[in-house]
Length: 223
Ligand SMILES: *Cc1c(COP(=O)(O)O)cnc(C)c1O
Image (cartoon, rainbow, N blue to C red; front, side, top):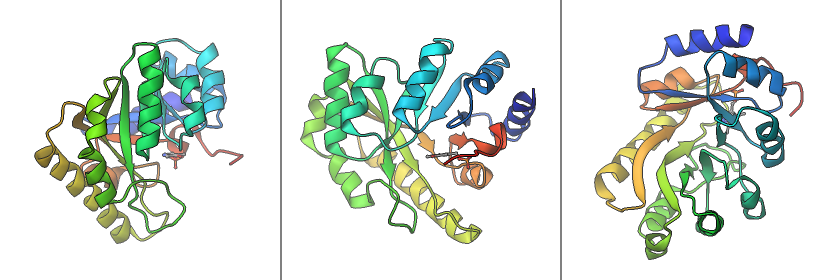
């Protein structure tokens, strides 16, 4: 029941509007079931195939969040059940999600990933790309997607000032879009930022969706 103790402790420290996505990647389905039995429903995975295998055997009312990079050729595997895709990082990916969702008459919720870290390896839009995407006429006709917010990952560093300023930058952008973009497919509702090491700081900077793995499930032994 350690998992539930960890979840309870984390939830006690959260503001009321903050959702915890329990990041279960590379942890066994038994631990997910344990958290589910404790009442938790939002789980995050970063690999399509692993999420698929878990989805097939776990309760059907789990809300699955895809938090990792999504390749266009894998959209078809998750489109029928995914709750929220956090890592949308191109217009072409959005088009593919829309097309696949249209085939099954679903509307799929997406977050746009913004590159905030001072590292080349992280996926995501920069600010100007994001603004031009949101102003791109082609999303007007995408009736099977909703853009419900932004996601970002801070630099992996001990420097709290740097992490804070990256989070604050994303919060500013989120608020700016809230105020300036009026679009039927866009509703800036979720700001997904913060992981085990920085979720409290992220919450101070306006995050309302934290993706916490190791603090709940323990250390991952394989990466
Ligand atoms: C793995 C992962 C997390 C969770 O990381 P922890 O440090 O274990 O909390 C959060 N977000 C993304 C995108 C991840 O890949």
